[in-house]
Image (tube, rainbow, N blue to C red; front, side):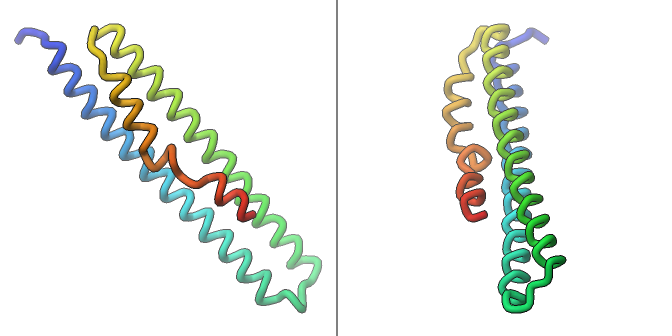
Amino acid sequence: TAYKASDSAARFQELLRHELGSVNYFVDLHLQTVVDELRSTCTKLFEKRSQLTPRDVEQVEAGLLSSAKELVETRQFVDTNWIGFCKITKKFDKYAKVRIGGWFLARVERESFVTAPILGVALAL
């Protein structure tokens, strides 16, 4: 079978779409988990607000610090994946002599893992 650049480009785009879906799913699920943990921490805090013990305060602080750490790690995951998508599409464009990188990266910029409100969740802390 003769090698066709269009076939490899189509396969590459399919793989990229699949990976985008995986990254989006992970970030969306992870952020929802962090938000749920924050809500739980805040609920406990407000329910006991008049009877907080030093142990309760420690638990709330630990919960907030854990959530903040998770948000930082999520931001790093997003940045790493953005860089990865940039590099892999640039390399594919160079070797396959096709130009899909610009189109694909414009799409990536609109994906939920890039537009996720990580900063908004962090500000809520």
